[in-house]
Length: 220
Image (cartoon, helix red, strand yellow):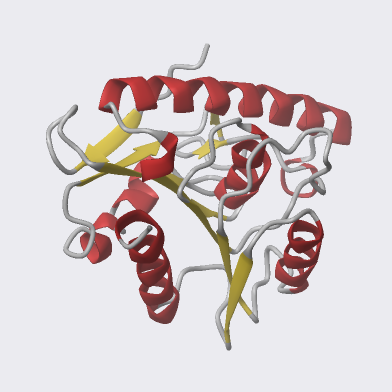
C-alpha cells in the first residue's frame, strides 16, 4: 500500500549522508519539485534528493497526481476528501519508513520540503512521527489541523514561505499556521514574497536553501 513511485538525484543509494524529500502539490508530480535539487546540491554535498508521486491520479489533471481531492476544485464531498487525506497520511508515513531504510539515512539527517498540498502533508505527518526530522520547509501551504499534545511526537524546526498574492492558498494561511505551530512548541520562521502568486520565487529558494544548510549541514 505504501509503495510510491519516485524520482531521485544524488549519490548512489546507500551512500548519501543526508536526504531531502520533496512533496509536490495538487495536480503535479514528483518531477515538478525534484528540479529544485539543482539549486541545492552544491551546498548540500552528499545529499540524496527524492521526490515521490502522490498516490492518486488528479481528478482535474489526469496527467498529474493528488495527495487527496479538493472539494471546491473537483466537486468531491468533504467526507470523501477527509477519507482520502487519511489514506494519504498512512501511505506517506509508511513510505517515509521505507525510503529511510533504503537510503540508510536517519530522520535526524532528513529534511522535507513541500509545496502547497505537499506542505499540508508534511506539516501533518512529520510532527506525528516519533523521530524528528532535521527540518521542514513549506512553500505556499497551510495547516490542515492544529497539532495537539495528544498527537505531536516530534518538533522539527519549520520554515514557511508564501506569496502575498497567492490566489490558491490564501496568504494569511501562513500566519495562521505559524501561530498554531508556535503555540504547540515548534520553532517556526516565515518569509513572505511580495507580488508572488501560488508559486516558488528565487528569494524563497535562497532562503530555503540556507535553512536546509543550517539544519542539515551546520547542525550541532
